[in-house]
Image 1 (spheres, rainbow, N blue to C red):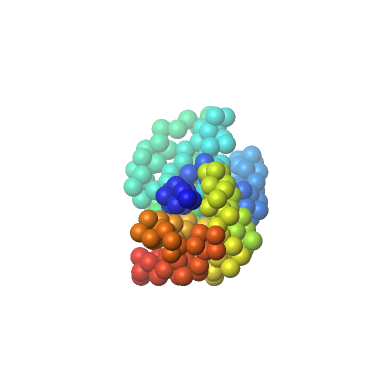
Image 2: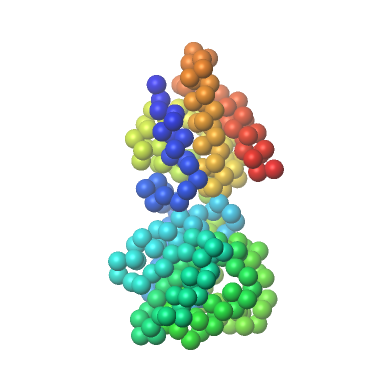
Length: 245
């Protein structure tokens, strides 16, 4: 029997580098970000639609640089903003610091302005990961127009990349039998529903394997894992839609 419970956990919606998949679009943005950090630019923005992989890029960059640099990774700035500002006040101007701020759309305009001031006068680079709409609003403000040195865009996965994303995560978890369950018709429907969003894909796949596990445990003879029916993906999507309604 395929390990459906383990497969479900592979797609739990958390930023876990153990299951990082180097998709071409994500890797390009990561490489561009690392190059920009080498130049010690003051302010860098990583933009893209929700679920495009911005959080995974920041976490991967943090993991790569943390042993050689003073790097701070902030996953929820809304809850941690006081800690961020406190750290900034105590920093030595002699040491170069990097701040990677995820979910930057949670920051207020006043907080953005305070961080801009610190970036102007300090020996630091601040990287903001945020949605496309938020960066357009910031660029309308004169004091940001001349200070945002890089805007790096993360594009959503295409259909083939999405298939690779799902397969690679399963294979990394040694779930070869589960990976072989999914066929072209299944991937086509998954892509139709998620539109290339990695977050939506994780959430949909989690629900899919949860549903499969339930039905298989209840009546295994009625669940054909060798030729998986799209009806299970449709059920997962209905549950997914209801959750996000």
